[in-house]
Amino acid sequence: MQVSRRHFFKICAGGMAGTTVAALGFAPELALAETRQYKLLRARETRNNCTYCSVGCGLLMYSLGDGAKNVKESIFHIEGDPDHPVNRGALCPKGAGLGDFIHSESRLQYPEYRAAGSDKWQRISWDDAFTHIAKLMKEDRDANFVAANEQGVTVNRWLSTGMLCASGASNETGFLTQKFIRALGMLAIDNQARV
Image (cartoon, rainbow, N blue to C red; front, side, top):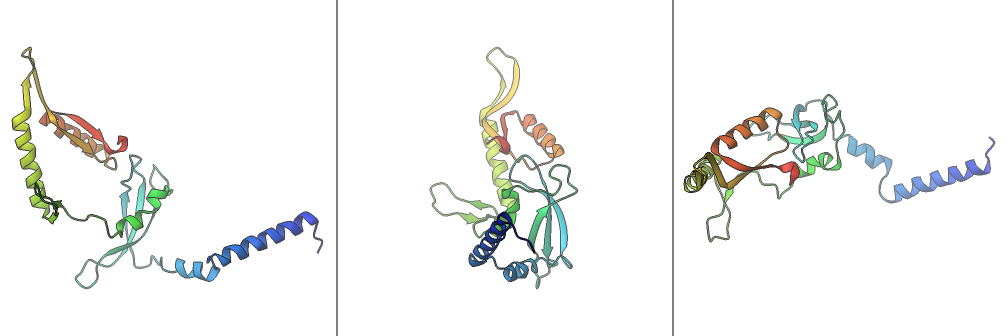
């Protein structure tokens, strides 16, 4: 075998890089062992949209379990949806890290309420949360609704409350949200993608 000086240096550099990577803990046996945990044979595949920004990339989420009492359903792998027209299977670093976000101990999974003057948050039901929000919105709208301006022109506006919408929503959801908020007279509306 004929080895030129340039080829010899390439072989040495490759060998040194390989041993350095192995010394840092990236041994091939460990890498192969970690890929075996993603067996998708009995997994349920669910399509969804990433909620981090307004791009709306498609996701494939894989979970095991049927939701029964003895087998809690758990997502164990998330990847980009290759059939989605926006991202065609690719994910940004935030989207690729959604698995860590889902299993984070600090992730809020239910509504909480903190009473005025209290320093403690208490867990409440979704019905209680929606009822409380609706009550506060009605009280504020009744107190601050402007039917006509100083010239007597009908304006029907509610300027004391605003709405922040989710950017991961579909066009249809955005359309319905706009119609609902504008019907209430609210003018201050923005999207999470701009914040």
